Amino acid sequence: METYTAMRHFADSWGLLAMTLFFLGVVLFIFRPSAKKAAARASAIPLKED
Image (cartoon, rainbow, N blue to C red):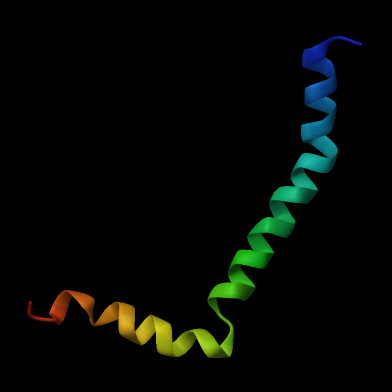
C-alpha cells in the first residue's frame, strides 16, 4: 500500500474521530463550572496597573 493512500485512509477514518474527540474535550474543558473564576481573572489582566 502506498504511503499516501494509507495516510489518507487513516485521516478519513480515525483522524476525523480523533479531531472530533479533541474538539469536544476542549469545549468541555473551557465551559466547565470551575473555569469561571479563572476566566474572570484572565479577563481582568488588561485592566491591571503595573
